[in-house]
Amino acid sequence: MTLVEKPGTELYAIYADDVKAVHWFRTSGILTRWKEERKLLHWEMWRTIMFFAHWRRHWVTTADGHRKTRDRGREAYARKQADRCVVLLGECRVQYECLKLDDTAWAGALGLINPNDVD
Image (cartoon, rainbow, N blue to C red; front, side, top):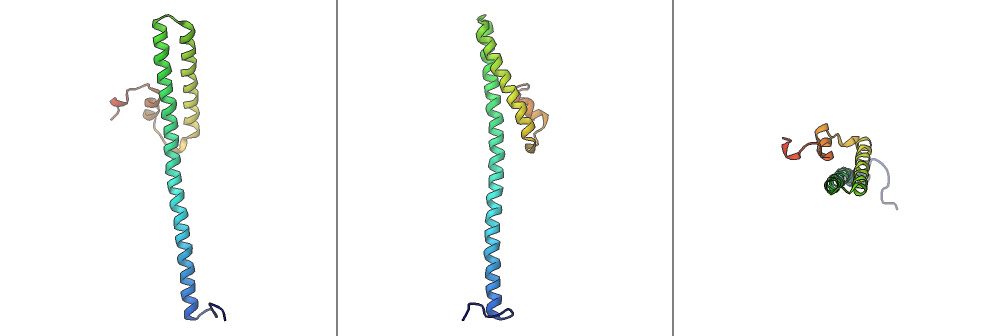
């Protein structure tokens, strides 16, 4: 004797409903995980942009400090590092198009505007 004897019976209908419910819950779980992963990926992208922007500002400030002390070698190194961060931010802008950031957000990340001035 089998669990479901033949299509069209009451046992078969109950079994089919259970199978559909299991598949629905499994698919719902997969969808929820993908949505969460997508959200996390976007935040990781944003944190990467902020990381490079922070270090760009750091190296520019360091270079300005070395310029005041007339230490040209250290100033040049700091400017090179700042430029490297700008290149990496440019790559982020190309690769992270899915974030759909406007020019104001990118200018803020690059330190070209004061973020407090943005409404």
